[in-house]
Image (cartoon, rainbow, N blue to C red; front, side, top):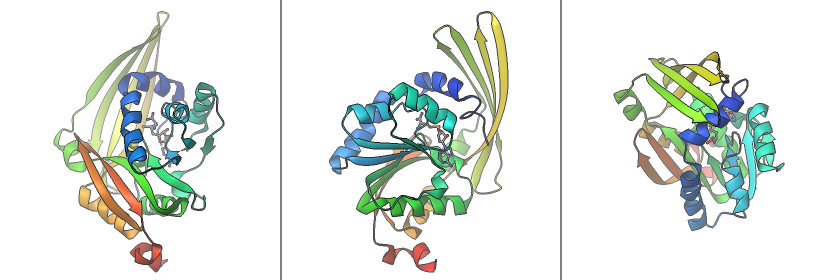
Length: 248
Ligand SMILES: C[S@@+](CC[C@H](N)C(=O)[O-])C[C@H]1O[C@@H](n2cnc3c(N)ncnc32)[C@H](O)[C@@H]1O
């Protein structure tokens, strides 16, 4: 598993404020949630809380969930809130209470086994009220593998220079997955430190993710396509119609 959310959590927090446009992301989710009249929400993969602050400031009844305590510690101190819980998304144990569950930042890419995807979606199904809404983004396999190039990023944060050199390599062991080798170089006060990191990420074809949703009791309402990614909006339907739940 990557170090990006544990040993390198502070680096993530500093870098991604410049990589993601969190205001734009919040507006995107906010308009979907308002349309569906959802106020009580769970954000899975909440990371260092960059969306949490915006949800709380806008009156949502919010809970953030993440696997890594290092990310949650940053979130708690940044947002000054205790609306965060440590948990693996594959192992949710809420009992039907949220109007909507969001998986943000394409965090489901870290769940690379089919069983993990099924366990995640089943746990979300159990955590949603009837007709509750699931919203999540994924990397789209065709788009990712069409433009499968190494890349570099240079980011200035306060008095630090952060550089990331990324190399990608196919690894199709558990699905449409690839290995991401990253070198982080941090320059501050004329000193330079570097860290190597590696992780495996999963992308999905559209058919494949729609089938995962159908099997676990969701009806897909909308697919919003962007370059290399897409966001799915799916409604919780009765377990009686869900093949995977019936078999268990
Ligand atoms: C790309 S980051 C996105 C963080 C945040 N949503 C943002 O936009 O900055 C992915 C997040 O998923 C979390 N994550 C990875 N695997 C997870 C798992 N199995 N269960 C819960 N969270 C997980 C990581 O700790 C990390 O915070």
